[in-house]
Length: 120
Image (tube, rainbow, N blue to C red):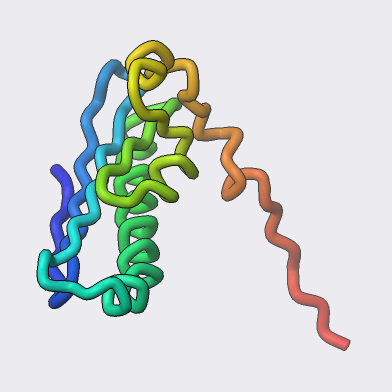
């Protein structure tokens, strides 16, 4: 139901779990290989994050096709992306699990309008 992709320096895993007919959770993980130096990790991080975001987008799209109206994204292995999706650490995380669910219809993608190209 999810996807897993291995690269030489990292691995991306994303899975979707329906919680109800209209809600689902995307669990994403980014794992770096243990032998990476700090400089190597800094070099591959942008590509790893991009690949993770694209995988999350794919799972969100599949969830929408199944009728989901709300999504919660949890990211392990990348603290900036974890916080980007509203992730918290410690007791606050369990206390506010569904408080941060966003309705899919209110996302930035759905708010953009396509305009026809005007030739000059």
